[in-house]
Length: 272
Image (cartoon, rainbow, N blue to C red; front, side, top):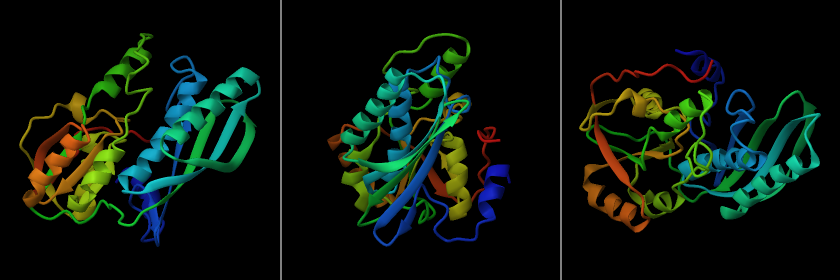
């Protein structure tokens, strides 16, 4: 067990373990976006930083088949931040929130040595999509294309430049696909730590392994911060799920079947 999983396991609460905590028909989720941990300011402008911070938090709500409603911001800012940079942060938060119908209702700001952001999202759901309920012989699929986030991160680390529409700075969330196909999906989560790492979470909680029908390289499987959707569903619903993927113009890649074999994650832990 890695340190992150060990820490989480110390909290004995049945609401912990998904992309958000479901309390009645509400979903509560929270993610951090810290300078020099998740980004560097030479990689992204302040508008992009705020927009991505909001996007990755809204992603958790979408992964739970929840409609994000409200956001609480906690922003720790360096003392040398300019008023124009503050305005860009606000605009980035507001534009992304508006796109998904989210109202920013408050939060907290403090002075810090660097730019650190945490956001709490409050959402509503009539039918939450959990990570559980995967049975043997269910199909596993992911949306979109994986691997580009890791590739662009390497470019930035090596002092290269990336396109302004790169997934590393401009995340595309799959809300329409989840909304259309939720009745056929048994399990879902967003891919934040990499496909192979997130499969380990599904494997542990459902006590299943996976038989891959498609070869996936480590560069693709270990690429974090993709924020595509990882879903599982009964084979009987394959045509229905593919039809709704087409309706929402969402590329869907069916790559494995759940099985009784043991699954081993081939990637290093992203945290700690």
